[in-house]
Image (cartoon, rainbow, N blue to C red; front, side, top):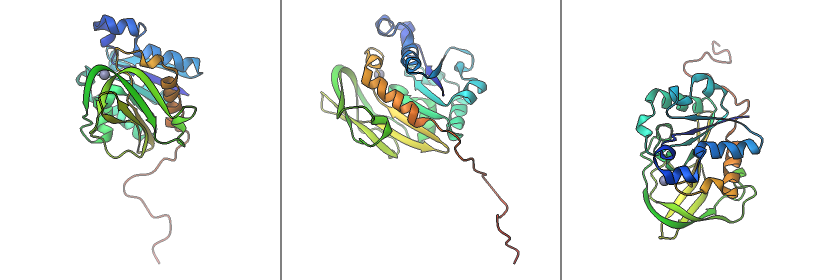
Length: 238
Ligand code: ZN
């Protein structure tokens, strides 16, 4: 099971506060806890050639995790398109936090993916709305984060296939924080938490959700379909 954690990795270089919270980068922190759980994990970042997402890396990736924020525009369209094509071909994709505006996610959703936000050190309570879903396995009724950035509705996404979490914020807003989408032969999981100045990805329950997300998003031996004009399977001549 090969997981690739992709991170823009800019805040960590530019903001000492973020570097202090994530000295190994957000990608390093996520990769570390997934490796400890037994996964084969690579990392890739924006400033690497082809953003670290060569055709070989993508071909070998079962699940790609994506964190980006301030440099979505610097992701080459060609690479974003390749990520999208790999999802349609069966790669799992987990999009975290501000990745809602990333090129791969907006291409796959087909909507603006806009939302409202506020940075005010607010408490976030992430309620489980689908207790039977494998992504919520092992959680309680909710996950509470003492401080996070607020994201509020309306979140301009297509109606999710499954709504797994709804967040409540101290300031009064709510947000669809966990949502799944099937695209082609691939599965997409959007998970909201993870503003760069908060230690969210060290939270054991957040780590559990991401791990469960990887297990859910992975596809093995998904049927392949022929597209376009085809000859009939039965004899139509009589
Ligand atoms: Zn943020």
